[in-house]
Image (cartoon, rainbow over all chains, first blue to last red; front, side):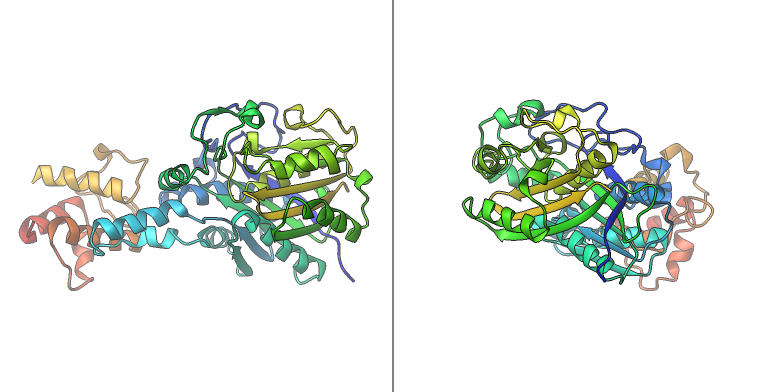
Length: 355
Length: 85
């Protein structure tokens, strides 16, 4: 028998003050830039100084968000840790490669090498809590987080695990920003985040963040929502998109009318927001719509912010005004669909339901 | 010698990311490992690379490191005696 999958806790470190679970976007920070950096908690409250000194930003963020999620779920241990990341600890990767070049392949030190791999985050969390269970990292651009979700969901449904820590993390570092600016993936001019969708310019405002969740096949008092389904598509045309969404909803026995809120990944890129805009104007024209990348910035696992957002909306039954995309509103959100894509590739659909 | 000691303290803080420690807090005789600065085996590797890169000293026997890296005093003394750059 297939077991249901519940989101039993959340943890977030993002470019908004989301690390405090007792708040839900009470105040939001408006950026006027081409990048948005994470609002960091006081890491010393979470990580001993001796450990923190060797941790890259992505590891620190993830230590906090994973600890927050574990604490809220009331768990000291999980059966598995599954992480999605587009670039892993790219900062130390850059430094390590830089050292190789600068020192003519000599004098390479261990710390940066240890920290430079994609699976460092999952490994560090496991070391921190002494988890010897399944430890896996998915690296697949904009569907890295969703890939981790799919793995966790299948294990929980089949009762191969009962509690899994799942997360998505990406950090922003200088060289990565420079190269993405050079190829036009980052906006060339500062854009006020509250007017992101009106910018009418190419590229996105880049961000960073870490979002972790304890998913379980047992409901508990802290439960936020039920995860109904996750689907990914590497390539989809704008014409195919509504057909696939329709098919996805049908497979999950959910009608379009039953979707109380759709969360879209518009990032203000004039070249690719048409994927969302066409859905907004046609397929979802009678559905309350929300967006979030003016709050999170764009990065490979930004959809983790959307997952956090949807979980919070379903638990609090409150849709913050700052995320509303159209004039329609929902008073009692019961079912939420998240749709995301990046530069026309790696599309994902995630369906959540109130418990 | 005192200049070298100051230089070593700066390098250790920077290369080992000892963000919360100021140069003044490291006494010349403080043990670097264990109870002192609390450095560990990975830091020892970082220090061995630093000796090679910055002072041209190759440690053939890693066991030597235990004595050399006892404190800033012992490090500075060894470097003064063996440096090639």
